Length: 318
Image (cartoon, rainbow, N blue to C red; front, side, top):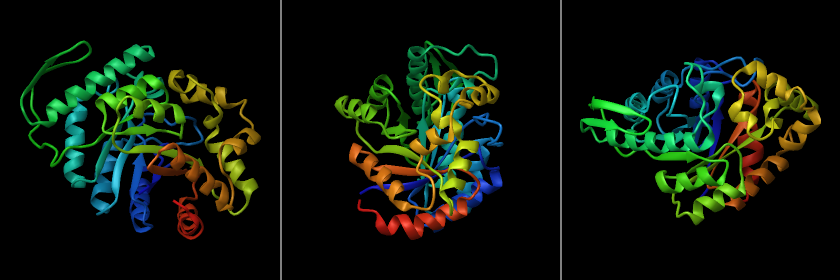
């Protein structure tokens, strides 16, 4: 059975609003929320980027049943995996079995801020693989000393361990990361639906849920929705590796300056009509995605929640 979620966009919302939206998503019947773990927004117009681990504490106390996942954390550079092992263990205690840890190899936008070299993709995946091993070992509550290729841990022990195993869902946009998700993860995470990672994940023996995000922009008028999506989230039109290589919001604004409203309209369901949204959901499910979550672009999150409850849910086929 497909589970449905809502994106809590840290790039677009302050921490108090994110906590409130978590409660509203629970009340609206969403199965889970995904919250981004960034240091910067993609562009200045988005305007926010609170510390996710503090925000998760607030969501944990404000909600009681909805599952909560990071979509996604890069556990390799900005924060050492030993620290993230403690952060995730504490979060899992607060959420009492409702926490899912989405992880990925990251973007230079967030991970270069301490002056570390941003490595090529194969090294990033190697770092991610070792980081997962370090975190899982620390979650046992045993004292850990680890001297690996990328990380050193000495005499570290987590005393408040996860009350139950935390699912680690590994993000992938290509075959190599999907293969790692199958080897080390408890599922596959995608920022947008894509057949290649799903195929590679399954052929590599991957098991567990497959998450996929769908960007939409609901508004009463289609023109308003297109304008909002183009102003707030033009990066959907930024191609390929640029998304993981550009280091600042200013450079993302330059890269997205060539993205037109027509390009956004072609990629993002915009406006009050539920049919394009339902079609995008059904397409993702047809690819094998069983956890589909929607990112409402722009400030009208309450309008989107009403649209979801009244226009989308009653017409879903799956």
